[in-house]
Image (tube, rainbow, N blue to C red):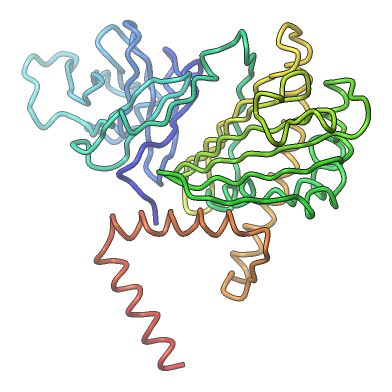
Length: 360
């Protein structure tokens, strides 16, 4: 079940141009396009004439032209041109979706358009600051439920096992980290400190440390599926874990993780890496991007294998451990939002579960 009255990421702004882009979001077919005037449109990917995907068409002066019979829809979904026909019936239209372009991202609202409030879209000024945070964008399609990917992002102990050669390092460093989990006004934040440890390979490649480092990880979850990451390390004893202002001169990166449900078993992953340690060196930004990309591909292998296994065996008997605190709080927030949006359906599901428990 998807939350619909909330903003999702539909794409990177730079990737939406005059060529229509087909996407599936919350299991609905969407076509994204940018008009010749620069406005971004999002429509259901289905022409109202014969049902052909509009993404097979092209962008023209007045909007998007169906590639089958030439009907043209504007960004509101209204048909503005029918070849050879002057009268355009009011019923000749398709569903449109509210979209907002912000911080290099295209955000889309899948629910009631009357409830779409752009002020609810999170701010991420890093994407507008190439001087202090030079960065690169990435995009993957993951064959796994979107919550499995967010689970992975909120569970930092896997880094030492899955990403040993890049951003992870020693597994024991992660499992013994000092961890704090707290709710924020919108979601949940996990802060982990790892004092006096060896820096992982990616960190050593980026910065010449003197020896051991004090390492931090801050992951903030914003529903429905965005995680904002700030990680780094400084030489041990410099005060990096007690004062954020003492973190300059070490290794620092910010990662934006934006996950959008495609179907119940697949998702779209939009991410960026920002270099906060050698900002004047383009190669450092490129090397960071490549290392993080390698790590995320390692995550993809795990998540897709997990999805296949859970489809076969279910997850009713899975257990949680101490490091799952952030993940569990994140799941509760999402479940609460789903229940608020679908109270009747969730009441019925709850009743069925109670009856099954009694009969069992």
